[in-house]
Length: 262
Ligand SMILES: NC(=O)c1ccc[n+]([C@@H]2O[C@H](COP(=O)([O-])OP(=O)(O)OC[C@H]3O[C@@H](n4cnc5c(N)ncnc54)[C@H](O)[C@@H]3O)[C@@H](O)[C@H]2O)c1
Image (cartoon, rainbow, N blue to C red):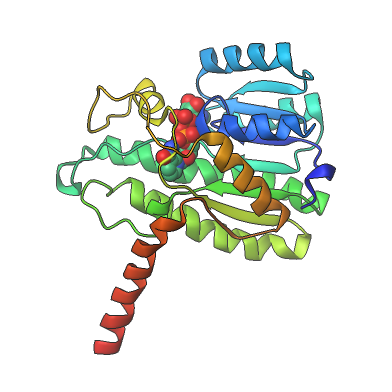
């Protein structure tokens, strides 16, 4: 998609981290942006700070991606304010609790799946037919490198949620291509964001409750620029940490070895 033609970006989890990096990168290019988030206080402070500096074409939208009625309202309010959405970022997500599957409270598993996976489906469900009618635009779903290789103890909810987002994005790309709509899946590695703090705020547990932020050389604005390049090139996979590909290649080598041994 030619981003100079973009009319309205809708970003879930847009009040922090990668979502906010995307919002800033798009607003800097003059694209009107709706940032949708469950965190009302963060939304308010981000919109106040950006509104003072920017063009005022960045608005906040309270949204819990788990809540389908909230999605319908968010779509109608956003499009009434800034026009039809032609860039959708299904980006909101939370961390896993780090417990082994046998010990994981079912509600903890359910929370990760409801936000990281069903939340992405809910976004597609709310906006997909609008994109088809427009006949243009681009959808980016945020997965993770844990959606490509996740064989670590403690990733039993997060890994499956992100693998499924990769698979859903591959299907959606096939379904949207005839309508001229692009689809990408963003697979970040460690990025410096507030993911632990945001996860705890909405009641999720994490391994070390004292951690609020993730430390990394890779910042949200780096990821945002890679995403915008991926959209411009209509790339299916947006890989921000190429060094993490070794684990993906090892996974496929293991599959190949077992297949050949079969
Ligand atoms: N930071 C990393 O290292 C990393 C790595 C791989 C993937 N990711 C993924 O990137 C995405 C963005 O996370 P981030 O790292 O920028 O974290 P972040 O916590 O800084 O931002 C996530 C935002 O999502 C919001 N959110 C959480 N639950 C929500 C809900 N139910 N409805 C609406 N909004 C909700 C939070 O309030 C927060 O503002 C997530 O899907 C995460 O899994 C992050």
